[in-house]
Length: 211
Image (tube, rainbow, N blue to C red; front, side):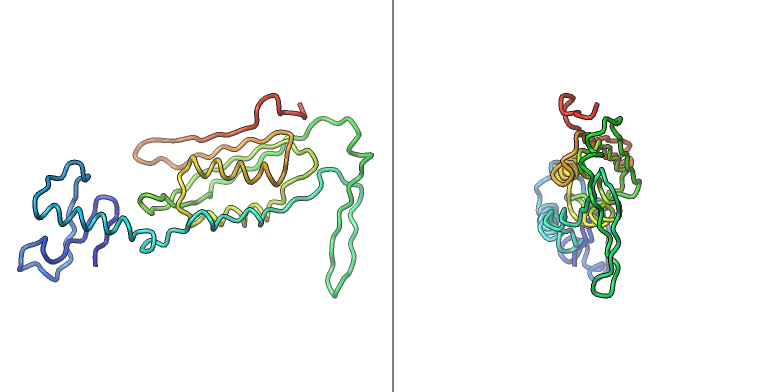
């Protein structure tokens, strides 16, 4: 069995001295570009390439199809009253929107949501990426229900996706569901390799209808 994770490889028969066969040996493997093409190193490279093909199964990396925007729920931004009815043995809540309320000239409401527990998986290494997600929007007709947002974000937990692609996907899903007057998404991953990366997307200035 070969366990490859970044630069660590568990070396087996054919790559270690005979008296060490059967033992688990961990060695440092330089990037492929810097490894000379001799017999032993070629065997290591082949093991690395095989693990690169199999790592998604080994590390249980989900594909982007596991991201489920259908979990996102909304409620009307303007409302007149809340109606509670008992149906089929349970209470059901209905919110009625008031067109007259919507016509009133009120200052735009800017809604800001943040979480420091956004988690996805690096599609290259399979290691978890933890970051802070910031959402800001000016609703037009709909507001985002927070519990549904939590469930939606949890679908990213084991998905192999780059930070830039995750930012774009969240922006696209929320834009489609909310159709807000303005939307801004900012995703900041924890420092990796001494580098801090911010990814940000927002609607154009001329799309800020509420301002």
